[in-house]
Length: 336
Image 1: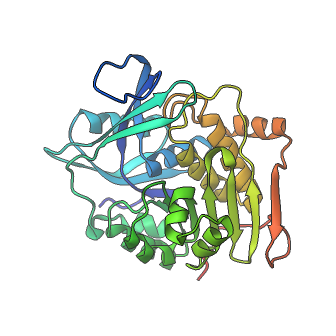
Image 2: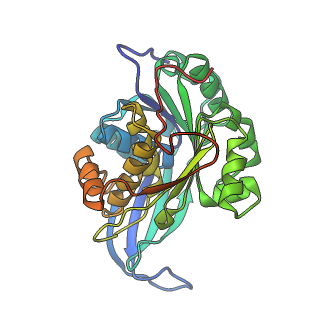
């Protein structure tokens, strides 16, 4: 693998690059027939890749670690990363293989989605193919369990070098093998469905406690329009309200943008409440565009939405730590 030249990256992402074809329909098909597409778009997607694009849009220096096929989808994926300023030095291409392709049906009236997914036939990255020097020099590594088990090695390299590891536990993506990765995670933010599967409970407090048992500095649960919940290693918890936008178009990628904006705010040394607020605002703004990257907001747009909403729109309930949700997150060294 090529070595990193110059300063290290703020955020490295190890995940699967997916080319999304987004189709807006009046209703999801329930039987054989013909469904009229109202409008459509095509762009890069995937949880970790879209988070990187969102973070880059907000000023973070990012790079993707992944493998794609040498087909037309792979060419589009590489071009889309470049469009959003994500470094592709560690994006490998495998000959005579296909890249991942997703079709996203979006219901026009409420932005809800139905996903179709073709994974592609490229080989997952091995531990030997990881860019060890780049991992050792990055400040945050963002994962969602793809490229297993190499992602375990990547997390160990980052933590041993003093960086942080972030994990996105997506809806319907809980796997018991992830329990081997969670002890290596510093920022553990998962979807409601993932938290329920991991905790075996629908209680938000039980879910946060179940996430916290792995020792992460920050644990969080996202739940769309219901907002997000956070708990720090010190026992402090709070709820971040979701932001409203004038016109919701598509919820594709909102959670991914949330992660990217959260990590971009962490790079700036923001408090946990500021990170959550920034992430929530960015996710809401992303829903005003078609597709996960149809509208990746700028820092100014995020600030404007927060100011319009009155800024301090979270509530907190102390569970043993002083200072409420104003918890700093310095990124100079890890938690070793």
